[in-house]
Length: 240
Image 1: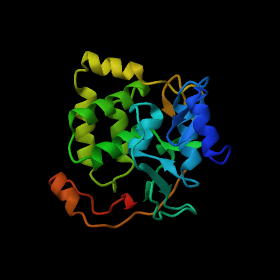
Image 2: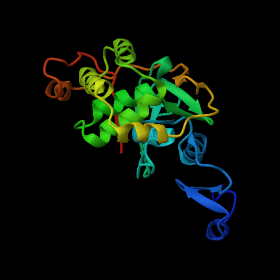
Image 3: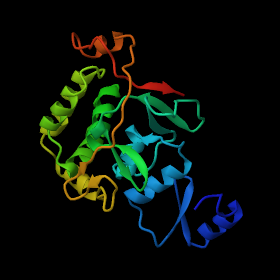
Image 4: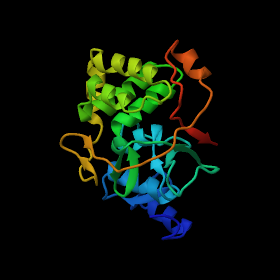
């Protein structure tokens, strides 16, 4: 429920009475368990049309992190009718995605667990303990391996910092998992009923997307991975 359904006073009163709880700017009945579907519905209620939850917003939808980011991180299809424009509450980026890069949860498109992990690992300034834990919790329920990462990266040779992403994900996927990481993965709530997702096997099925390759300066790639930059980029154009 949002302010389009009830007044702010009515929603606040229902929350104080214990009938509703707030979830990312919208309200839900306390009888409704928090789930990936509910988080997706909450984000879909405020996100621009055709936006795709990505990066830390995708982590939140999947239940890897407890709170949504202060500014949601969203993608739009580079070949779609929606264009990245300025929003005060979102970081909206125009990207090129392959068919298997998105899933649909409760009507909201979300980057797949694998694509989300690749983007987070290649764009982060460093692979610290917090990011490694998030990546472990994201990838483990789907049984994603370094071979899956290699297959996806091989399909996008123009993806910036792809070698850096591969190196970081290999460290995460092949590292011994401590007890706290196993507990965190088990605590991440499963996707039960998701359009385009095989919940039992953690497989996100494709929604076809196309796009154009963005040509940008390769200096950042060369600095991040010496000798590993691609000549053409399939990059994220962030509009703040």
